[in-house]
Length: 415
Ligand SMILES: *Cc1c(COP(=O)(O)O)cnc(C)c1O
Image (cartoon, rainbow, N blue to C red):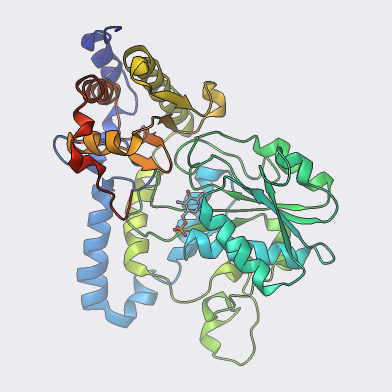
């Protein structure tokens, strides 16, 4: 078995890390190495300050007046612009609202309406399931719609795109394998066939830089409770390129998406620009926690973030392969750091039990059926020493067989 590298060398990398100070902006429990920020981001201190103010002053004291005086009404757009900076959108092209699932529904319906005469949705067979469930929901409202899946109807998504396709729904980073798609190339391919493309950025936003406008993307969705650290169930975002705003119609036509919500008139009229994607009253407390988190992101240089993310994932792979390979742990996804998001997956026959044993020792990653251990590397609060310690713990659990304890085989509702 190869020895672990010298800890002093690893600590020197932490000391030289330009993002190191960002860790102090988060509350992290003692004794935990948190490698699951790709499922639920850690809690930024600013989020608590925002929540406290929103609840105790603005809600309790300001009451209904706070919709105007505390800026509640504009939060969805204001925070949309903060997210927009992180995904290469211009001002007024992104709004924060609802859930990613709901936003997928709205985006697909809008895209189908913009491509009359075309009835095919192309998606990925190994997509995060909710994306496909929502596509099925859309198809249930439009009897002509057919869904074509990569991995089912053809091996490559490119081979599914022809002039019957209205919209391609695709994940930028695959949630399980961490593999990253070439956004500009696939967008160009969809456009060449006359189709629109909707990018799911759940594992991109806050994980790596992306340039929606430079790639000429049409629409995008994503969540804010993963790498963006907005808090459990924080509202999602939706982006549409400005060139499409006037044509966009989506069927969840609630009053917040109306041109004049407080005119209380009869008959729906879509609001200006991206606001037409809103539906009903938005969750102000959740939005305010997200604001605290996005204020932290305002200070982050995404190129420095990406550089550290690649270094963390490369170090993790190198150490796991050097010290745990003999126990049947196998790298999933790609070896090429430029084609990888900010997560690493390893498979093992007993992945579930091993992950439970890791969590029991304070190394928190997660399990994805049927046999994947998933580790997320969030450069704002994970350091090089964390990687070293996580691998040392994994090696010990494998070498001693500690994962075989029967309590680690009990399946919980959320994995
Ligand atoms: C996490 C995730 C979602 C979650 O959708 P919600 O509606 O917020 O629960 C959707 N798509 C992808 C790719 C995800 O990773």
